[in-house]
Image 1 (cartoon, rainbow over the protein chains, first blue to last red):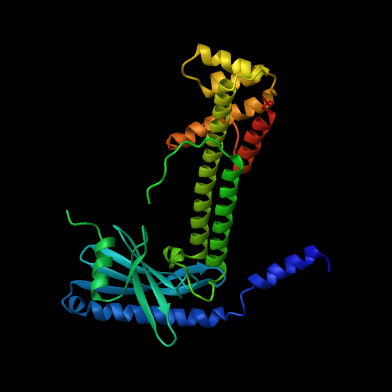
Image 2 (tube, rainbow over the protein chains, first blue to last red):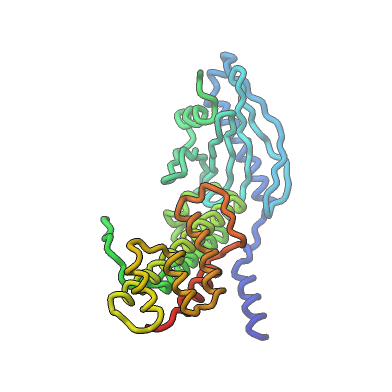
Length: 154
Length: 181
């Protein structure tokens, strides 16, 4: 084997992703989205009961490498005439095991799914620069996130 | 930390290039770490800002970093070259050397109080027999320097594309042609 062949094979083996079961990860990801949306529904429970907020779930198409294309649930939140969406971005992201973007007319906020040994949680990225600021998803951070993505009141 | 803003009496093109190569290597290593897995110790603090980015978004982030680095490197190479040319001018005038370029520089120094890089120093170099191609290559790159030094707020008409190694070759070709005093 010459040095060139050796170099190319060595690079390929070092960068190879060791047998990740993307299908299983995708299924866990879809389940985690469903859990996230029910948690948001709980947080908004009072306003849903009073009719101030209406939730709808629909399906969007996600494509990401190396998973490919797949359908995933999206949560639509109607607050009066305004709408915001919790849209799944993908599971193959840096430093986390999934990402959902909260989209509104005023902007976008990123939510990341973080897993530790036996539990998973969602965090809200409040700012990226000059340094990263994130906080666990709860009623207070959901309020901050909604404020960021909804249009300011006139 | 307050920086020492002192005159650089021996501007060094190789130091600029070393700086650029080192920064490029660090950037490539950071990109490799981010896109191909973290070290066992976990993400480094600078990687926190990449949290949640897709591989495509992270690749775009690193490409933007590299582009910024390339632009800064080209500006650094061009301004360092100007400093080398002006220090050489000063030395030749002060040391009253007898070679044609030193004589030309002294004559220029008597005649003009404010020297321009392009019209004065480059013209004098041209008159002393430096290859026209080396001068014109550097003159073309001065348009790039002007654009970089003024914040790139207009669309430049550069006549060609430049990468850091192109600029290094251009300035090295010019400096290599300067006759010994």
